[in-house]
Image 1 (cartoon, helix red, strand yellow):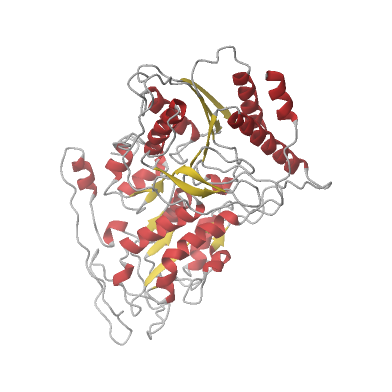
Image 2: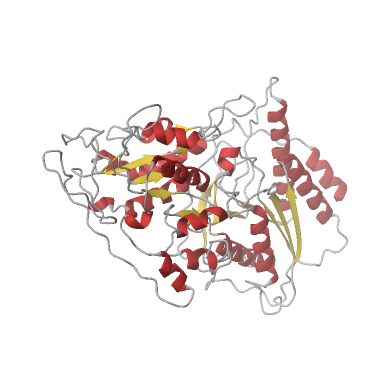
Length: 536
């Protein structure tokens, strides 16, 4: 059997047709954040915990806290903990812990060989009565430096050109051969009765028993746009006094080796942003100080807001040009209400740039909700204090109808460059601090959220996802299947071009938005970070 397995794995996978663009459709979020699953199927009484093999990418070397909270090693640890706690196991199997093997790989080639070796060893094992086997694989996608800033779990499907030509590069050939080897190994495992779970990234030519979805680029853009709409109260805003919002979309058109970078991530991220903010720009309730985005902008306008974050002071230079303070432009500090910075790295650079420009205050000055003392007080059991907003005027003051300078935190600001106003763009000088959004829940970004410089961040729901995955694995190994398991729903997977289009049971927890008001309940209480990490 081992020989047959090894031979089958050496055969090149059959072609699946032209490689499709990586799918970025967002699986429908499963309602509820609790890891409890009331509808968990009851395993058979004599079910054994079986074996679980977890294959993830390596985290890589981290030299500082300037890194997203969600890393592969952290997810592996949470899954192991949930499995060892017996979540989802039957009464008889709860005391027995599954055999768990973990492997991290730096690239797809190493991972495909590791999975192949494991499958062959399981098929040739002498003991066939130690229970079922579930293989959990997060295919290595090797994201570029910009994409890596969003965290390890951002979806990047592993695809290749199955119709290889003679001019195929060494890199493309290695990727194709590694991907085909991984798909072959998992197909053999599935055909031999093992269960296969894919995490975060889909794999060309293979359909798993369960898919675990984390963040897609569209979801990352959408959740930040939604928070801006809520915080700036755009539904109550008038086109006569619009909110001024800049969208910073980090993207380097060229990789370090000079090749063209894939634009799929940034275009999909902007699509998520525009799905939410587009209507407000189109009806005039929102505009950008730079006038890059406006009523005529569309989902295809993503290139207009991209910039290269890898350049020295790239974010600072970009903001200075957009706000009219760079290269000897106006010395006035122009009004800006919101900056969608896409990730915590760019958000940190934005905070630094705005401080250098002379902007003052914090996000609590706009539609105030909570103070630092309230956050500290919540650790002593006090109830968080929620403050109401001071309404913005429906119509902006004009040069012919001046108003007195507003008091700090009043919610009243003087616009500049309002299309219907006689005010010139240089007539205002408004250093009020804007709302800044990010993504990744960087450890070193949390103090910035506490002090109000950054309004919010977000991250994938790693803890509850790991707990639900453990329940699903227990059900698979017990032979009871996934039907009726709360939090698992069929979602479209794969494509017709790759020959694996199907509805696959999927775990897709909602993204977790984090602001000062819920930082304790979302990040600290579940154990993502400690109070010390937050500077508390």
